[in-house]
Image (cartoon, rainbow, N blue to C red):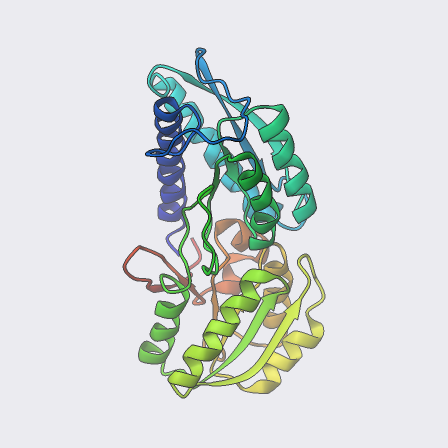
Length: 310
């Protein structure tokens, strides 16, 4: 799985992003580089000894299992930057909000960070639903959001830095791996019921049609679902060569437990998951996902890796 490497990459990425936003804002006084200051009135003040930035992550609810670590990494990055003298001599001051795994809450608290706390930029979100809920806030105030995770693509905003992989950088190469290295001829699709999984599976279906791979089933469940009895039984009875998993949050824990209870494993029907890391594995139990697949991401390629107990 490369958990330590993945965690280190998160930390380096967060540090680079936090440093970059400080330089950007000090040089442009809140406007994007190379542009004139926006007509929208901003309360951001970067003239003092500190730059105030916002963190918005799910510290409660179904997505807390994934987002708490992102929040930890953001704080670590800010501490490292401040200990090293800050950004151009200015310390980073953090204001934090809990998105509580609810898109409407993300939008409400992003508005508070931008309009009341006057943060220079916000770092956070995870699900595409949370990002899309916050997008009008940042565009309306001409403010900046740094979005940390992979997403479905098919969207661009001048007010959002999308730092994660899109489907052509993660999902398509992972599918190519399943075809070329695992000899997969059929797939079963399981995902959470929101924007990213549905769009990803639409793209997966297009890929499957082009490569003569049969889709034997496609099931969705609300974020936070913990009852996978029906879905797991349908997966088991499908006799698919592999499962492509776009579940998010602690639903992964419940899915893998039910999957294992039916006697399925990486040898009988491997699962390739795009949104599990060490936090979810702790909840599932490392032995229960031994040999399962997760795609690593770079700007050039994605290579699926098998999980192994530490």
